[in-house]
Image (cartoon, rainbow, N blue to C red; front, side):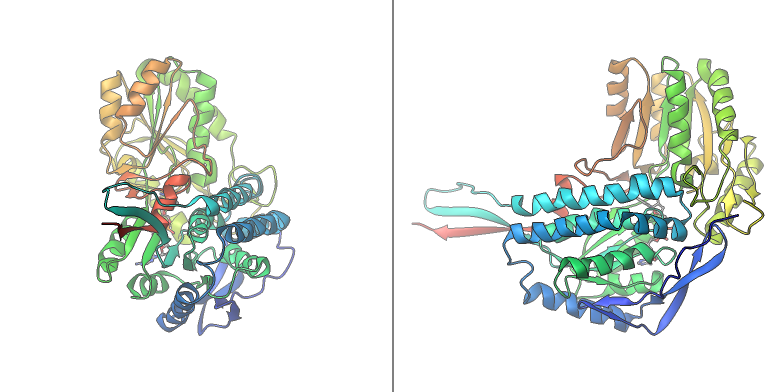
Length: 486
Ligand code: NAD
C-alpha cells in the first residue's frame, strides 16, 4: 500500500507583508504517488502579485532590513536554518508527498543541503564589502556593494525548497527583499518555510510568497517594481523571461535545462562508473537539470559496461516514495509522465534500441505516475532523445573510439550545464574537463554539490551562477564613490 499522509494539509495561502492572506483562485496540489489531491494552493492574480511587490518595495525602501547591522541579518538567516533543521522530518515528508521523490532523497539530501546553504550565506552577510581603489592622488575613491532591491525568485518543481534556498540565501544575506514563487505542482515546502521565516523574525515584507502557475510568474516578470528575476526552470521559459523582462530592464539570472554528457573511458574503474551512470540518470527520477542523460562509453568497454548497467537498472524498480528503502519515486505529474512516455516512443521510432524499462508501471495497484528506469542503447547524437531534455528516468547511451571524437560529440548539444569523465588517467581527465563546454565537470563521480561551489550553465543552460561566493555578485549592485581631495 502506498503510505497515506499522516496529517491533513491545510490549504495554502499567500504570505504578503508578514501576513497570511486568502487568495481569489486556487489550484489543486496532487500527490504523484497516488494521483490524489493533497490540498490546494492559491493561484495568485496580477493584483495579488502587485500587493506582494508593494510590501517588498516598502520593506526595501523604508524598512530596517538592508540598514540593520549585517551580523543581525546573518543571525536571522542562521535562525531560519535552525528552524528548518528542527522541522526537517516534516519538510522532507511534505516534499516527498508533493513531488514524488523518495523520502531518502528529501530527508538525507535535499533538506540537509537547505540547512547548509542557509548557514553558508548567514556567514556571508558580514563579509559583503566594496574596495578602496586608489585611482588618483586628488580623490578618495571606493566602491560599495549594495542590494539590488526587490527580487523575484521563480522556482521549478524538481527540488522545490532546495532550489528556493539557493536563491533565498544570497538574496537575504545581501539585504534584498523578495517575492518567491514555487512551481504550481510543488508549493507545500515553500509555504511551510514561509511560516518558519515568520517564526525566525524575518521582518514583514522581506519575504513574500505568492503561489501559482505561469500566469502568476508572468505577472512577477512584468512588474515594474521588481528589479531582478532569478529563475530556475526550462530553457523555453527562460527565453520568454528575458524577452518580457527586457521591457523593465530587469537584471536576470537563468538556471536552465541540460543534456549532460557522462563520459566513460575504457581505463575507468568499471564498477564505480556503472554506479555513477545509474546515479547520474536515475537519481531524482531523472528530473534533475544536471542529469547525466547522455552516456558515452568507449567502444572497447561497451559490452561489458552495458551488461552491468542493465543488470543493476533492472533491480531498481519504482516504489512508494515514503518508504525509506525506495530509490525510484513517482514522476511529478501526469503531464510530465506523458511527456517522458512520448520521448520513449520517439526513441523507439528513431531506431534506438530499448534495453531496459520503457513502460509506465503501477506500484501496489495504485494510480500513481511511475515509470520504469529506461535505457536506450545504439543512440546517435542527432536523435531527439540525445538532443532534447527529457527530464525523466531515460538514458541515451552512445559509444566512441577516441578523446577528440567524444569531446566533439559531448559538446555538440545546445546545452552546457554539467558533464562527467570517468578514467584512472588524471592527465586525460583534466585535459578533457578543460575542453568540455559545461558549468560543472565531475571526475570519477557524479552530481556532487556543495553550498560553497558555484553552479550554473554555459550556452542554453543559462547564465549567472548560484551557490558559493559567485552568487553574491548577482544579488548586489556596485556603487563607485568619489571624494574630491584636490
Ligand atoms: P518551467 O520552466 O515550466 O517552470 C519553472 C517555473 O516557472 C515554475 O514556477 C512556473 O510556474 C514558472 N513559469 C512558467 N512559465 C512562466 C512564464 N512564462 N513566466 C514566468 N514564470 C513562468 O520548468 P519546470 O518544468 O518547472 O522545471 C523543469 C525545468 O527546470 C527543466 O528544464 C530543468 O532542466 C530546469 N532546471 C534547471 C536547474 C538548473 O539549476 N539549471 C535546476 C532545476 C531545474
